[in-house]
Picture 1 (cartoon, rainbow, N blue to C red):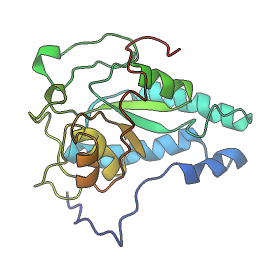
Picture 2 (picture 1 turned 60 degrees about the vertical axis):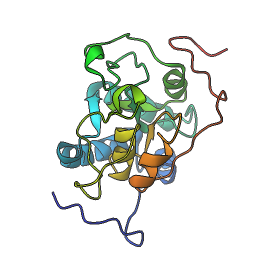
Picture 3 (picture 1 turned 30 degrees about the horizontal axis):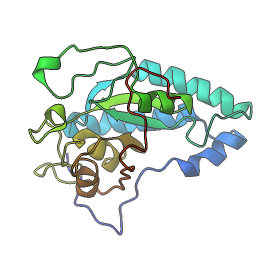
Picture 4 (picture 1 turned 120 degrees about the horizontal axis):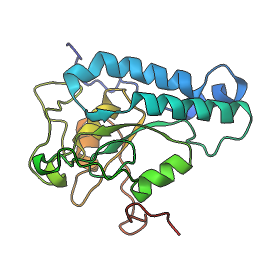
Length: 210
């Protein structure tokens, strides 16, 4: 698949905020937005391999609920309906959490990490688990390639998150970082990373934040 080289004069990242006026006036909807993302996923994911697991049925159901809220004028937040990927270190109630490690294949706690819980409470549509380096360390996980050059790395450890956003398959994805595990794949894959202040987000697993 010929993706072409990254060119900042031509590259247009997938955004979400500019779609929400259409959610307000009925010319667009979170479900239609999700379907556009899934079309790109179908076209690009076989080559890029950014995802470990996709939950299309669950995402469609969540997007339908979000569409109904927007129609009724009761969106939960500015990210209600946002399709998002979750790094496969963070637990999700509806998808396994295997952490890029053979020892955790089949690991399925069936609960949400606090950050994932907060995203769902805000109306975000959790679509996929993204490839991570093994246990978030330095050993590469999966076969993910850079969305602009298959001969190059997408970076790590939030490998799939950076690649999925860079490829325009998702407008946003969650990563984790101790060293450069968020900012490196974002930089390699031509997107923007935000690393919150350490301790600024509740990281308890399976518990509702106070």
